[in-house]
Length: 114
Length: 113
Image (cartoon, rainbow over the protein chains, first blue to last red):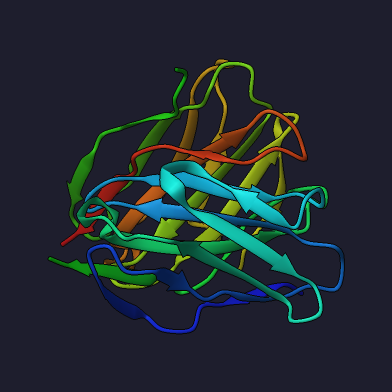
């Protein structure tokens, strides 16, 4: 069975500071990993994905994530936070089996202070 | 840019009533999903649909739930007799192939009174 753990349900950073959102996964098969962002009252938007190619993945809005198999981690980073980054971030894993369903973490709310 | 659409955006219903949530996936996509998110909780998988049949369903997806793709464009989720605990945001998602990412609709907020 697959699972995702996001450490820290709330993260607060100052504008211009580094953003680090943590995600650890558990999977018995090579995982495909995703980060989605959810702005208030909106749906889920894909930020980036890891699909067994490069371990450092770049996404939209300046975000990137690094797949570390030894640490079973896929942490999301952004060098400099912007006020518009305030949102809920979800890490998800898929085994791309027959169904390819996504298993989500609990989510991390990012607050950006001016 | 193609997108997944969902209607209605908000549905209020009385306990015990039937509701149908509608989704129009991206036109060339072949895999379809429903997820739900209870307020303040994580997004949970409900059901996946491929080749005109359910490919997997979660424990949440009991006999009160059903899905249908009636006309090759719409993808619906029906709850036969709603319960208070069905109140949640329901997301439809689709993807073009097994290895691609899923695209999500904006969601339908279901409120059961």
